[in-house]
Length: 337
Image (cartoon, rainbow, N blue to C red; front, top):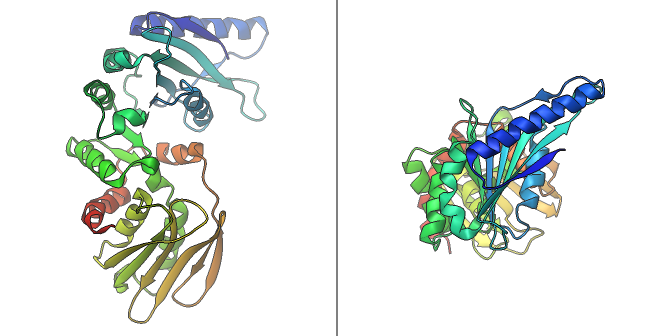
C-alpha cells in the first residue's frame, strides 16, 4: 500500500496525486519483473464520518469491501482535531487473488476536514467521482443525520447526497421518528435509500419468505402479528419487519421483553387456525416453528458491518421490498409506545 499526503485538498491536486501513485506502482512492478497491476473500479464509494477515530474504521471497512466491490473509495473524516481545514491522502489498496500473480489495486482517498469545512466538501467531491459509474454515499456522520443538525452540517450532507446514486445509512442508534422523516425527505427528491437496519433483518426475512414459498399458507391468511423487541422503544428493525409482514393490513402489536441482543426478539403470526413463531433462543441462534408444527434452528450471529455493506452494494437500484416495508412504517409509527 503506497500513499501520499496532499494539501490543499483540491480535486486537481488529488487526481494528480492518484496519477503519480499509479505510475509509481507500475514502475515498481516492472523493476521486480512482476506482472503489472490491474486497476479495478466499478463505482465511487464515499463514506462520511464524524467518529472520533478520524475515519480509521471507515477506511478499514472500505479496504475489505473492495475485494468484492472494487471502487474508488473516498473517506471523508470530520474532526475538530484536524490539523488543516481540508487535507487529503491518496493510497492504493492492493491484493492478489488466490493462485494469481497479478495484483488488483483500487484507489482510496482519505480526506480530513475540520467541522467548519464540512459544508465546503461538495465541490471537492464533484471532481473526484468516477465518470459514468454509480456513486454510493454511506453516511456515518451521525451529527449531520440528527434532526437537530446545524445549518452547516445540513449543508454538507445535502452537498454529498446530491451526487449520490444511492444513499446508505444505519438507523441502529437513531430515533425511529427521525429516521422516518429523513428517509421520507430523501425519497421525495427521488433518492434511492438503504438502511443497514433493514439489511440486518435478512436472517429473519429469508426463513419466513422460504416458509411461505413451500407451505400451503399465505401471508394474507394471518390476521395479527406480534413483534417482541428488547430496546427501550421499537427500533427501525422492529418497524421494518412489521411493515414487511403487514402489507395485507393485519393487526400489529409491539411488546418490549428481555432478550439476548438489542433489536427484534420474536415475531408471531396468527391466523384463525395456524400460528407461526420465530424467536431468538440465544445470542447466536433462533428457532422457527411453522404452521404445520415443524421446527427449524438457524444460526443468528450479529452480522459485521462489512457483511451488511457487501449485501447492500450488490443492489445498486431500488429495493422494492424495502420501499414497500418503509411505506407501512409511517402508518405503524404513531401506534408504537
